[in-house]
Amino acid sequence: MFEPVRGVPAAPPATGLVVSAGPPPDGDRRWEQGLSWVPERCGSAYQLVPWCAVSDPATYISPRYAGAYYRPPGVRFADACSTLGGALDTGRLTRIAEATTPFVIARELWDGAMGASDTWVIRGVTYTNQRLADASATVVTSTATTLQGKLAALEAAAVEASRGQRIMIHLPVIATGDLAQFVRREGPNTLTRQDNLVVVDAGYPGTGPAGQAVGATAWAYATSLVQVRTSPLEFITSPAQTVDRATNTVTAWAERVFAANFDPCVHFAVAITL
Image (cartoon, rainbow, N blue to C red; front, side, top):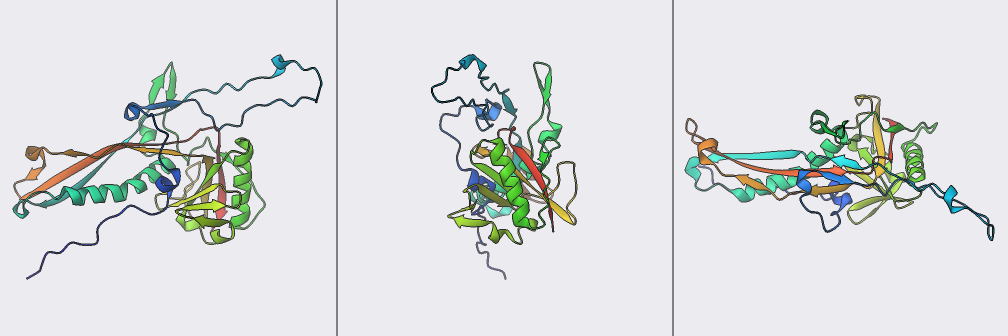
């Protein structure tokens, strides 16, 4: 009675965090086991000296940044079909996973639901993955009443902290009403007039650094540039574990790990009136 046809195929978003972050630098090895790095996007100390004056270089205090750490969480996707329909459509599961992964990464970066419950200890110090909606974010106060004014204050604080290096502003979809007054589009990216990246992602819920829910206000954050990594999809192919004989269905699983990290020294938040 009904002719099986192929539906509209799943596809990843054309904009958002993963697109704006771009690929990480070459040379990564075994990052899935955990990442450690020395931040470079923190505003470095510097020394001004008079022209032709004798100065003592020993008075210059070189920056010493503590190492940053991140433990990649995993994500799993599933697709079920009838055992009477032939072989599993792994292509369909791949499309679903690739289309959904950007949302998962953005949501985890914002609220850290997985990372918050996955702590570890290094040399007696307890660590957890960084997240946007965290009490460690510096709240920017601004007398501005418009979205443009609030984001300008947020941007100014972040570029000051990074000594003028490029930063990234994270904004939930619900708070983008007047965004056109503040940004321009360039390919898949949204940029401020100062060429800083503005990321609007469906995975961003808009909650505050102290757990404030979205209501009359939502929150935006500014950070150093985010790096995003994703491992290849791996399929779980154990029929004994995935076949349900009672319903004649078989479930295919695909899983991967990912990382979304930034230099923690540039981390600001601002409340936006909706």
